[in-house]
Image (cartoon, rainbow, N blue to C red; front, side, top):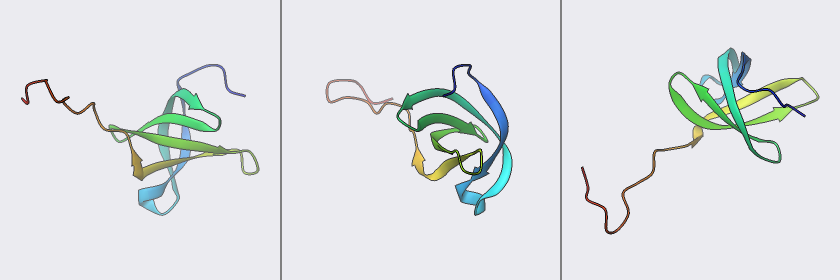
Length: 75
């Protein structure tokens, strides 16, 4: 569906109860699963074709940096 990234436009933001704010889709992760960035936070997003908008889940869909493994030092 989308082939050129990044996509920057107004999207529905979960932590703002669906208010429209400027966010960026960085890449596609899977079927209707996108990597988004809003307010410096990377998170999951989905696309709703009926309203032609992305929904960014910056509340429960936050993607955190890789945690240190068992044998890696904690810094």
